[in-house]
Image (cartoon, rainbow, N blue to C red; front, side):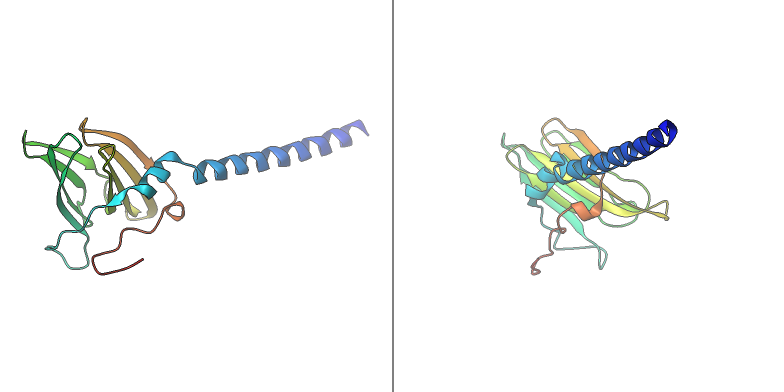
Length: 165
């Protein structure tokens, strides 16, 4: 009798623990601060002179809070990444490079904090669906965060000029 009671208790405790873990993961995903900052950041416009058809490309010069300029460039294509160039110093840095077959699909800026957000998605290794979010500090010239995220938790990518969400 004691053995059966103990087994049932362990089974119920296991189910309770499993449900708690699922709730914690779901809560974390819905309140992820990186996703929240990306969601509220402003879209960076696409380049008006795309080199490849059906490809998102960026080449935009922005002013930072201190008045300095930075040019954001990159493309959603093989070898695609997002670079930042500082004309005053000639410095060029990679802000986001997700690797083979995972390309930038959305670029946004938090102008109040000079933070750049990049969403990259695609088939890692040509096999696994992957989505990454990058947070790059434009003042400090450094990558703050690179995190794999679930695409379903992110807002729609920025619309192209003339399109509406």
